[in-house]
Length: 113
Image (cartoon, rainbow, N blue to C red):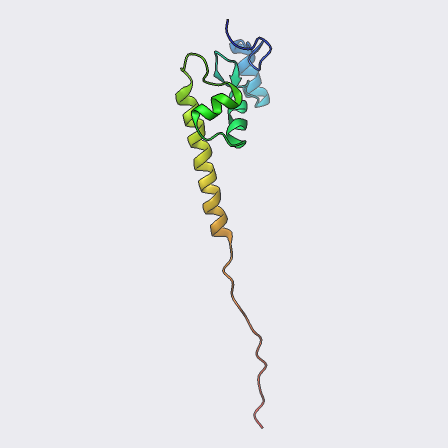
């Protein structure tokens, strides 16, 4: 078995029954493992991306995901794409919430005499 025996995937074995109970009774999903070879979770990949890893190779250097067989490379790229799309949507939403600057003046009425 390759990978870190004490990593996030160590001991993360769930029976179907446990999975269903956790999901439907508690709304809890077991951690998704992106890289089985290195035992790297989706959360760790997302943290590496949030910390500045912008390519699959940078994610591999940051957290180890993708350093084994390569079967997870597309999943890592997909997560990077999701992060980019979310960041782009946030920028657009931020631009839409900026109120235009307008100047309103109270001009007192001048009584004609």
